[in-house]
Length: 209
Image 1 (cartoon, rainbow, N blue to C red):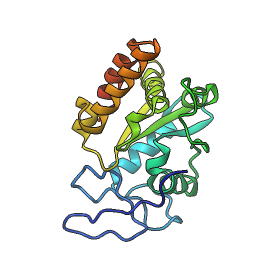
Image 2: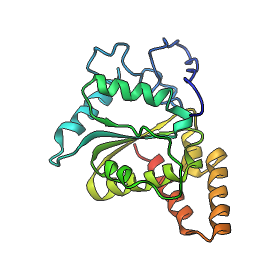
Image 3: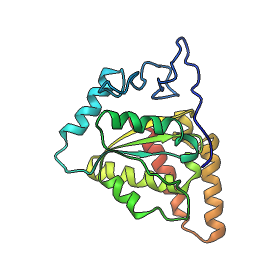
Image 4: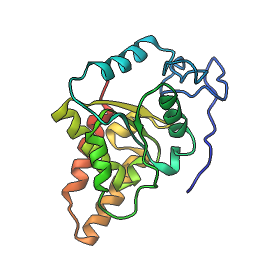
């Protein structure tokens, strides 16, 4: 497993304690943080976010196995932000699916992961700097957006140390990763349409309010 516990950046005009994790590192509004105590049955200090999350879980008429599916790049956030978020969800009594194994071994995403996405009410996508470098993560995202469009699944993007416009417009590391995937697929005789789907899906997911 690559990486270690993430170091939280200093918030502008305020300071965060180690147990306070910014919800959106690209958002200057640093009031949206995880709870200061796992005993508090709330996810964020922001009342609207909390109410929206609880409402999304309680209002659906469908039967789901999980409340939340976490999509993330393991080497970026598994030992930091995502594990902290997963623990807070558990402490709040929310059933969250977090894959225990590092993704990326092979070209095809594992069927159990696809099933877990379809069995979840909400998908939280943690866009980190290396998210787009994993074809598995991108295939996850395609499935998540499909579930949003066909089943009404709620999708919440989190921009962890990345500019949302880089995700939306495929710039920086996201642009480089997509170019690499395109070249790799061409050289291997793979499905060249995949990258087009990934580009469209990244833009769509990054535009979710």
